Length: 308
Image (cartoon, rainbow, N blue to C red; front, side, top):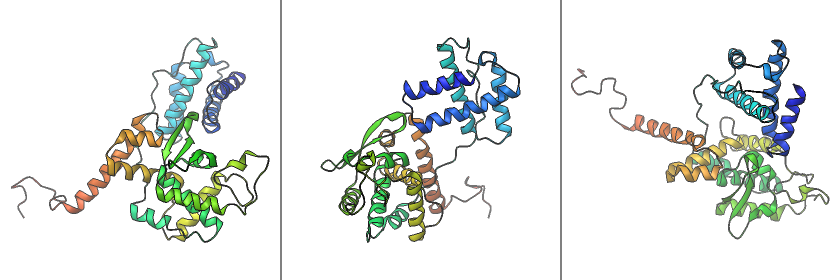
């Protein structure tokens, strides 16, 4: 059974070209499913039945896993068994028709435009500040994911067009506009990175953002720098890269109302993923309405029902 999981993982890497992050997720989910089979004396994947999958999901639900995590585990099982059926290693897909319990979808945290302006008000006094300001501006200007920003190279920026090419989930590339302020911050950073050591024999030579040692900046380092500027600029809470992406999407949608355009900018394969921002904007509108409308707080808004 382990050998077949290993073959499936190689299939994901070599034939489907999925990212390391995605493949690791499949591996973790199937490791949990393998442990369940071991506990229940199931010695081959073909022995696994639909009721076993239901029990597996119910067990994980009792352990406190969210609906989203349970759906991901089911998706991993379905994809794995689809592969096994294709390879004639199983006669059926027991994960089909099994659904995970739904949990309330948490709305993403965002910063308002004033908070964004406060965070981005970084004075580029040294190379750290020039680099960090360029990263912050690019996150908010173009809605990049953390991995997209880290993996971007200098030649991915089209300085004349004011655009940047990024590689997102599933190795899908998209070209995004870069605002004039972010572009200026990137140019300032590029001019100021010359004193830093350059790697002569590594792909890090071409990295858009590097550390003081000349290596491509790590995701953990980016997160740490954002935390630093959050404290420095006296902003409350835990600001992280994805919050800047959420803020970008929410502000664009609020101004344009164009959900399809926001989907393209974010690189979402399914528009239902983007629709979370419509709920976010409705929540904002509801708060404005609740504060502004003279009868919004009345318990009995029907004429004649309020006797006071």
